[in-house]
Image (cartoon, rainbow over all chains, first blue to last red; front, side):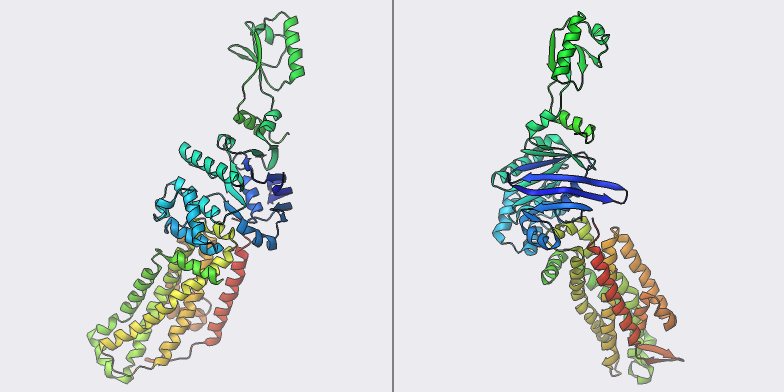
Length: 299
Length: 250
């Protein structure tokens, strides 16, 4: 897979705080890359460095196959659409007038502006003042501004922030559609649910460190779900010295792999503890995410 | 840079920049010539020794010193605040326009608005003087000189306020400094040149081509060296400060 964004050892240090720590990022071409992490984990800083808005303390960045430098940035920017932190838009101007500014900035054609507005379904609202837009409309305008240049790469920082479920779904469908057209989309969020349904590749950041990067299935493999042992005598089971908690149906054990599971079952069977069922807890991606970020970069 | 200036004109729309400028121009012209309609003043309109035009210029200088810092602060603040509220700095940066370029473009765009405004303001003051009945011939030299220098000083303060409005997000600071500058501008008209040249807003007084010798008003040559020095200093400070803005990570 060709990488559209590659970083190696990317680090950003502010006085006493390391916002991004030795980040190795690989964003594959034509995919939606979900960039996840709790608030303050360094997602926006990373995206700003990729866009050349913030200078890294150390490390290398390659975008669209070129090392990011002052000189190459000017050449690369017309191919990179972005929306960082908050959707841009001058409130005293209409959506259309804002788009005209983007058009002038990047020397775009009027059909490109019309197409971008149509893509985010703002054509009918384009003559309203942006200050009167709802948050969802502002987000869509921000995306239209990023899209107008027909980018090869789209970098969106929390584009679903503050949106209602319908708005989130709309953005999600839009981004999946864009990826389908060959645009590489890097989208950040602190909410896993929002990313889960659109991203084919995930990167999880915690305290500035990349703790996971890969597909959804690979992510599940990183986390061992809790084990539920159904028994009518949990007291006897716990008396065997197991590190477990009581649950209505028996006991629950965390972080034990297949071999350890076999040993526990043997131990309980030998002790005469009745075992009716042994199963893994059904784990959502959210659980895996919390598990990983909670462990803060142990992987 | 030309494109960046064109963008600033697109952004000016609905900021009421032209309306605010027009109101202040009319206010300055009106307040400057208010005393012309007093009965006692009318007697001097035909007496060259009474120097009615010089009298009018003294009032104009005072009103310009009082309002110009506020006008510069308000225009700069409105044109710059939109970048904070609309995430314009980031939008522009991702299109290759650095904050420094935006600030310089804003200066050019707003100066273009001020140029006709200051000229119209002077012409209005003169026009009202003629309308009120001043019949002593007008010596245009000091008026042209003052108008030109007033425009340059206004541009200098625009530059400083654009920078301030870009650095400090709370626009009350920039406008507050403008109001303070208005007081200092008037204050320096009443102090010696030695004091005025040390205070930035004192240059509204320094550019006045009118002075007093005993009881009489006299036309003076403004201290061009000091004025040029001030303008060059502001130019250098603005160039360096806006370049440094490019390094601020927002």
